Image (cartoon, rainbow, N blue to C red; front, side, top):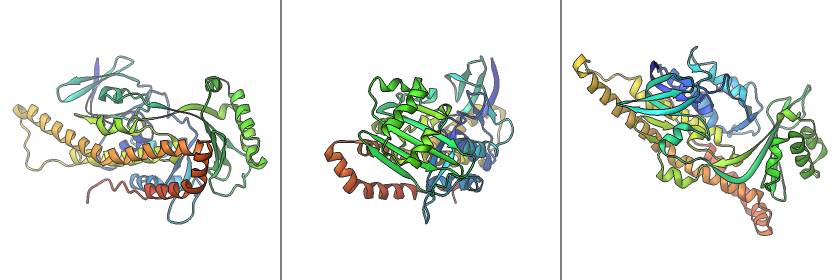
Length: 394
């Protein structure tokens, strides 16, 4: 049973989905966000946001809120902060009009219908929309509709944890990284009392089962990090078991985005549905925010600006729908054109960074220690200098 008609439907209330919806709202364009969970999804604890992400957050009008809540890790012209995912999602969602996000709304199918798409929900509801945006993560049903494959397994797993202390952790606001045979570990503060850490490695088949047992997972990490400084190791030792999270590190093959469909007709993808990547550059969430701004700008040109001198007549209704459909299609092509190659390059760079940093052969270790660090630093700074632009073309 069809229950409603919407101009723009966004599937997924993650970073990209909320950023796109908020960008459209700033332009005076309404959207509906469908979220399968019954509340905002906050798994993952925290993420790194570089200068490019802060430019996007400032455009969306929430950068100042998040700066007050998180430490700056790098001084100077480049702004880097470790941001708690829950606070980021709440900052974006709280700026949206009431009713924008529809929770407990799982999409099960997408159907063609003339110049619109019919979105089927698990409860039987059908929503007709002029634009469908998939921001529904690595297992995106919208990406599948576009013909994109499932995200590939990188061969590595990641364990993440987060601890909030009663008193200050007294850490310097910087990123600490440790390497071992086939693994990489990082520890960094989010604010005065919260510390995030991660551990990535190439697991055996037996070790892949660790995610089923947090206790064994914790023991495994501590055994691997026995030579870590005791004051830093204590943060992992004191992390509660329910704050351990393990998952395979997935990414989209870059060549799939060279030849595959990011958009088709009035449908497109953004965020992890578009460019899942390994976390080695800390740019996944940053790119998702960029997606949101660029997508809102492109669609805003269709929905926030009326064509001058156009008089709607009843017998021209279908003609008008076709004209708007073509404008939507062109706007999504423009979005895909702007985002495609930047995301391809970052996906590839992130994957290769992980391979090199976790490599334990003598040759790879020599290259990493002698040459790779300055190369990586240069790329990171260049990537973080990117400006996704404003919401309106000037």
